[in-house]
Image 1 (cartoon, rainbow, N blue to C red):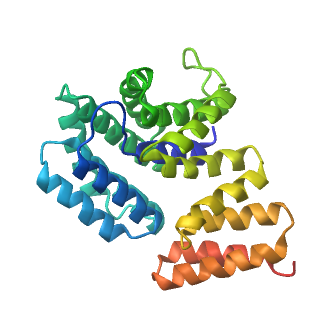
Image 2: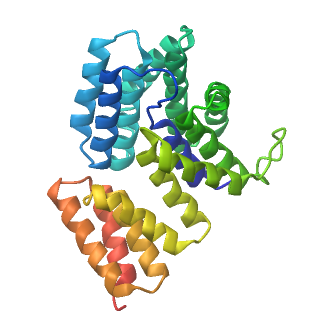
Length: 287
């Protein structure tokens, strides 16, 4: 099984705040959009403040707990460590509890999204069975919402279906496993065009999927779409660099590398990110 890709897809399937035909509280919408934007700008502490404010305002809603858990998860990925594992687990427990106890469509969604975040973290720690169990519980909530026409819930379902399809041979022991990647990609493109909050988040997923399918020009185009709004986004800069190298566009790749170096230095990024940068510099030296 391609553990890294499936893990990251589940991380990105959870990092969304949905909108559907049901009304969404304006403060929730604002906080969700701001958290996503701040994570894309690698501004984790500011994103935490937005989530904390939402928890303070609505302490029994799973939405704020989900957002904070998502920020923690991405922050730990950035650090390359499990530094925040203890508070992460505590926040996930609260969000899942409030979601499962509620009959509200949105509370149930955010509770399921919190399960998805925790499942992604478990997979990053190679606890694969635990991760799959959490993912199944989340999808059981997402699918009915998708069937009701919720475009953002479609995001979570399509991401899950894509990576299950990509790993169909390894998951032969699961019932009704099908490779539905073309359909899932079509759905994700719809999300990128019509999603309220997930239209931005889905671009991360498309980066990984196009990379997995070796569609390097599409990886480049998707990375540049992100960079048009978040020019210092180091995830997009890494994918941009990689896609340019794969297309033998070495002069452009060097420019991308310089931009990433500046972005990492500007925010005093974790050591792990600079180690990847140095590795990429060595890879392209002499080109």
